[in-house]
Image (tube, rainbow, N blue to C red):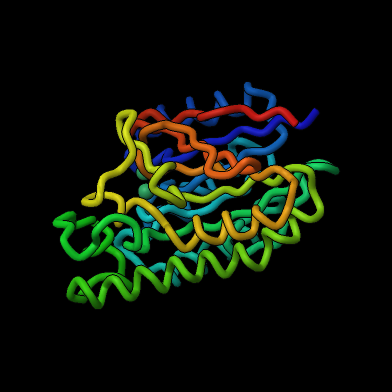
Length: 264
Ligand SMILES: [Fe+2]
Ligand SMILES: [Fe+2]
């Protein structure tokens, strides 16, 4: 049996050292074979040190994607480069956004991408929501709303292109594929307090490009696809197709935890 730990939105940068060490201890004592992380680990200026600390402390293979917070006070390009460097330094560490299909067991594969809120679900044009992303991430700041939307769509499309590249291979090869991403890929997966997001919030909390890719690819195969995401910090589950289940896991600031343990 292979035992996987899944955690999302652990926001280690707002945790003190004691809280972080307790989290690592909980992971070690869970007897896991691997840890999967769904993004929002830190911010641009501390993600490298926090991930390095986590990888060293948990001492098991780690596969991760990054979330919007991981790019705060820096740039998407720079932080994704840091993630690549980290994977070169630590054996058995995989940044899924830049990786091919990972074999977990002979019948289970893993793919993933950060995803990006692409403003295509709900009503971006009338929404008054102003995410910190739009001030604190280099690629999104300094634009008016419609200019920014173009950059958000480009990021969403980049995520979808990666999935068109890797997900068909995975679903063809394995009985079950896990897809780790930060953003809920559709409105039905974008939970908040037991409800799904309205037109005001959905543009900033969903990646439609990834959702469209998931449904288009999954419809071509009979194998099972399980999507693990976060970002809303509020849990829920949806089944948008007979072979697709999307788990959105909850999180609390300063209380990092394993969201679920998956036994394969
Ligand atoms: Fe988060
Ligand atoms: Fe997030």
